[in-house]
Image (cartoon, rainbow, N blue to C red; front, side):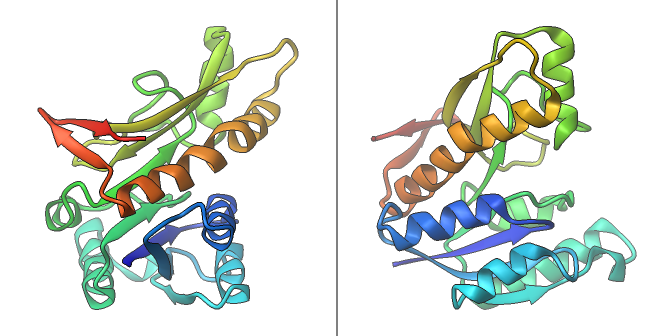
Length: 208
C-alpha cells in the first residue's frame, strides 16, 4: 500500500475528491496518510480531520524564503515516508530540492489542457479568464508530474470540457472541477499506486 501525502492551501475540493475516491475504492493500492497545509485554518484541514487523516500545518509565512520552506516540506515528506506527493490546490512554489528528492513521485492537477494557459502566473481563476479571453471552445484539466518548471512535467491524464456561450471564469472553473479535475486526479493517483505509469523518453505512458 503506497503512502500518499497531499499538499493543500485552501478549501480542499480536490482533496475531497481524493478522499471520496479512496472511500469508494477507486484509489487502489494507495492511502492518504497525511495532509500538509501551507496556511493555518484552511478548510482542507477540516476535511482531512473529519476523515481521520493526519494533518500538519507548515505556514509559508513562517519561512524567510522558498529554499527554507521547501526544506521544511521535504523533511515532513521524508518523515512520513511518502511514496506519492499530490499537489491539490497548493499555492506555493517549491524549490527544486523537493523535485530532485521525489522525481516522478509528485503530481499536480492544472485546470487547463497543457500546454495551453499554463506556467508561471496561470493559477485559479486566472487560467479560466485567459481561456475565455482567447475564445477557446474547449478547455479542461491536466494531471502531470511536477518538475523544476511550472506545469511542464510529463502529462499523465487529460480531460476536455466544453466552453459554453455565456460562461464566466467562475462558471467554467466549476464545470472543469466537476467534469474533469475531480475525475482524473483520483484516477491518476490510482494508476500511480498500481504502478501503471511508466516514463519513456521523458513522457508518461499510461496503462489504463
